[in-house]
Length: 165
Figure 1: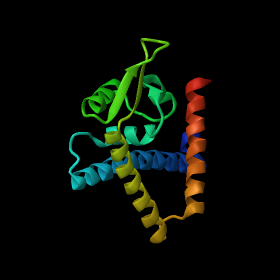
Figure 2: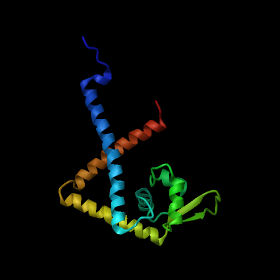
Figure 3: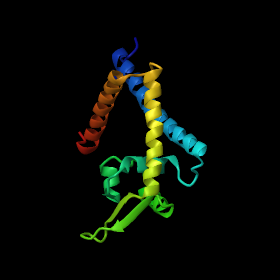
Figure 4: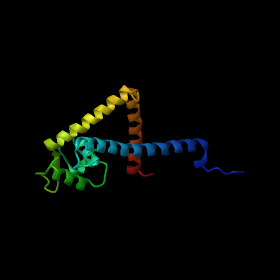
């Protein structure tokens, strides 16, 4: 007689396998996205910033934000936010200025050079979206369904962090 723990039960094993597959896919997709951006920059001769920094510029867009807001607004997911901001300021892609109200806080925004790079990333993403739709890989309805599922996972994980039970 074999004892089965709840984790070994067939339905739970199926959802566990699917969950682990989803986690691996999300991680691989993020790494592939960074590689795609890196390849595009190499093609364009942009070598002074990396793909993570380019995504940061893309996500900031026309907003002016504090360094802390970069994470809370979801513009930056990494850990070295101050290092990346420093590099973007040094290379002329971002402008930073002390906040008039709270002198400890620094506000950042894109420079014209930063907006130009953001436009290059935006054009890359537009080509990819059109290519995926044109090749029948995924259309608007499928993309909306994927995004809805990913948002539910994001909400679940966020709840796990905020409300540990």
